[in-house]
Length: 115
Image (cartoon, rainbow, N blue to C red; front, side, top):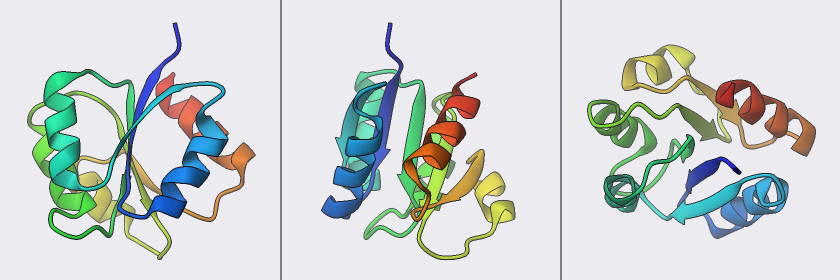
């Protein structure tokens, strides 16, 4: 059975790129913001969440911190800027990965997190 990944990102281009990279290997769902991600995780269990850090409303850190008290799903933060893994860990994320990863690098991170 294919693993389920929730991609949370307010940027349509970023969502499309992640879809392009991951859709052949995983079942994907999308949320445009933190609030929508929280609603989706109440309805369905995911094997991994890829969470943008900088979003309007609830940002990735706030959403991750809230979700960490409700679910046990690994969360990888995604950022185009140099974010701190210390802040990510505090908020409940496994780590932060760059939006500039190649498909191979992204697949390696996702696969190693899902083990």
